Image 1 (tube, rainbow, N blue to C red):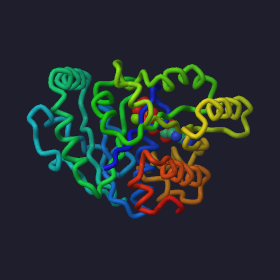
Image 2 (cartoon, protein in one colour):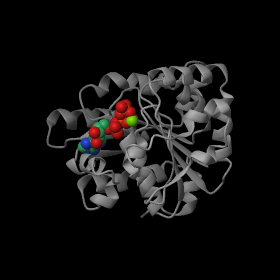
Image 3 (tube, rainbow, N blue to C red):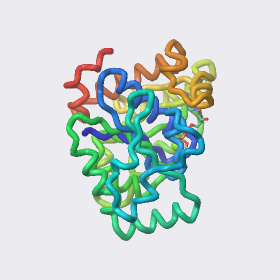
Length: 266
Ligand SMILES: Nc1ncnc2c1ncn2[C@@H]1O[C@H](COP(=O)(O)OP(=O)(O)OP(=O)(O)O)[C@@H](O)[C@H]1O
Ligand SMILES: [Mg+2]
């Protein structure tokens, strides 16, 4: 505990990038961190230097109820990684159907992971609403909805404010209280991008945790399968990442464990 989820109603906004790099930043501040990939795209591993041909993950074994620890990887960053594992479209559909029928297939290992009181878990979610997100949201101390700082983000604000993408039903309002927002790919020199960011900031107030600028260092880090703080610690995006992590820490009382761990000011 605790669990931080990176999710969004929209794809391609930087959920995986932020999940990986926030996990790394938390690890560098002295936390034990597990990065959990709940997206069948299986992309979180790419940030942690796993060989491209390494397709193993927990999803393959889910229906057989394995011990999730078997799929855990140590990574050079020190972050413990639980990769999703590669699945084709049929495999992804089968998995979604199995979870619909038997939510415990995911809920049980998740509870086991979260039972470790010293472990911080950072989860990368699939784009949009998903069975995985509906299952995981009740366990999350914080759900970070990632938005691009562009004109399209305005259309997503109601979706985030209502918490609709977290799943239907009366519990949605409860999870919505744990929702925070992170802006990504901000271009301060672009009037449109700056205006979009301002409008999101006005709308969400203190629930906006921070904004990461568009920075080629982010893409270069992914291309070299490294983490941003490893490849380009002095980059603009790395500075923004540090501020975002401070924003996460400041979002008390949702994350008392982080505040207690004393890394908020670093
Ligand atoms: N701040 C940034 N500056 C520059 N490039 C970025 C930034 N953030 C993300 N990117 C790039 O944008 C692309 C999409 O990022 P990412 O895969 O993290 O998005 P995602 O929301 O996880 O996508 P999906 O919905 O497919 O899971 C990647 O190529 C990534 O390197
Ligand atoms: Mg992703």
